[in-house]
Image 1 (cartoon, rainbow, N blue to C red):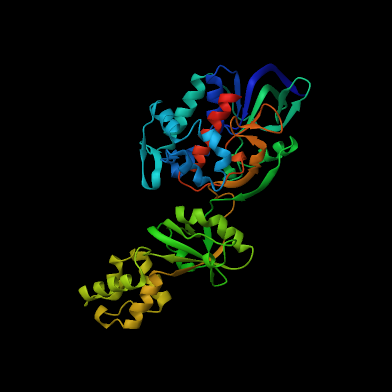
Image 2: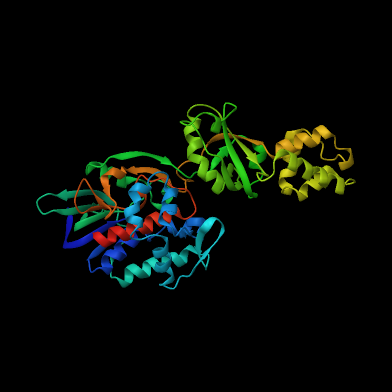
Length: 426
């Protein structure tokens, strides 16, 4: 028999992640009675593992237009929301609650503590201080709207029901399903009349066929360049409609292939191309040097260490773990003494250092995805309030929205912004 909670809340928030907690806290701060429903046994489960447990809170792009350029063509939708709450307000929010932040490479901002727990503590304190009612282990089975009373009814799998005047869906996408992000929110929203764009994984590590690369797990390369090829043709040469960008930054070798910011940023493009044939990624270890400059650098090294073995001298040029596999690919004997290295071998090695071939096997799935793309069509949301254009008093925040973005703090900033705006209007 179904039990019904007779209390009618002003706001029910479904999903206790970053966007959900921000929404709930902000709405309660305005005097609304708020209940937050979280399916897991703890709030913010995914937040605690974000950024390897360090939590990349945002990115230090204080110019709103510069920030919005990172959201891949969706800036025109997001401008209204980011005009209300963006990077500056986010930093002030956390700093003002005792969590100082710091800036690292590429504008990435982290808590000074280097712990996601610090971010979690601020959010949990926020909803506690504003008296949000939190229900954990609250597994929602469906959402309905009563057109007579104009209230939302949230059915839970334990047979209970929660009623509220406004409903906020903050259930996330489908990346890292072990944290509870399984995409059920899309099903509910579709039943309520929304268009759901097919879900994909936007930031995903890449599996390789190359056995040598998979033996380098843990090796990180900084300031490298990656270029996508398909069927031997460079993607940036295929014409404007098929053009693919070159990606630069950090790369991390793993036991399955490659990851790291540069790889994650290109993963969606690679996934699209895999549908049409074999994909190869070419790795340039020295993007700031042209072939001639790198060849001269290598030659100077070999002359300076003329009596050393080639494999030993290369350790000062590239990570030691890369030396043996690269010499093997180039078919050059690493035992050769530098003064005996042939001109053609120096040329071959130079070419390889600027064009190491990596053969793509596949993208890893949802369990490894950093974020997912897809979600509610943006034309169906009023970004001044985050309210649905399909149903009054229904609000949509965070990863339920069809918004692509790179890694680097942009996903969490989307959550903070949309959550704050929704909480200010629901």
